[in-house]
Length: 270
Picture (cartoon, rainbow, N blue to C red):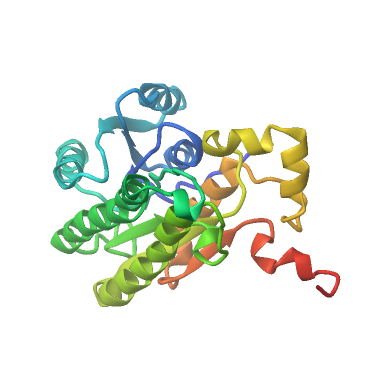
């Protein structure tokens, strides 16, 4: 399918955390197609250069910067290097996230803390640095109606409990309230904050589920649309939320889930 682009993010430097694979990679590529100057954040060993090369081959502008979003000094360096390269930041996509699953009574404090550190604290650290830069620069009306846009990456599990994933679900519930609080506090300064809440999406983190016929069949029972999402589904939504087309939207969680949050078990009366 040919995707029409409209330069909706033209000349806007955008940091996408965890952008070497999966949803982050798809967002980075779509942002570049829409004219953004893209920063691919990655961890050592991730194929970030491949994403940069793909963007440049298509005529886009991108660089890769290594940083662990759970570490405050790494986050500060990520933003400093971005500003050194592009002069400022207009968009942050807080995409980096991990899972370390186990039953609740067997979950270690180490695995609990690591998921919270990356998924929740990492988004706090990055959002804080982005907000500082947005406030320093203010609105550039030649680029956007907003001083800056922050997109938090949440999940349907900010709403849906998930047995065996207490750390992950808790981190996503926390992201929902973090996003809403940031949106409330910074709206008067024309900084918008929203969340994307994907359902089941074909990414490396859950390949063993969607790539297995039996588990795939079970998963599809939870999705009224009867298909598992693609990273591009999330990327298209991320473009819209970062563009001036959504200028009057802040503090909102946009569920991109094929209807998973519609409680499909009740479709026939429960």
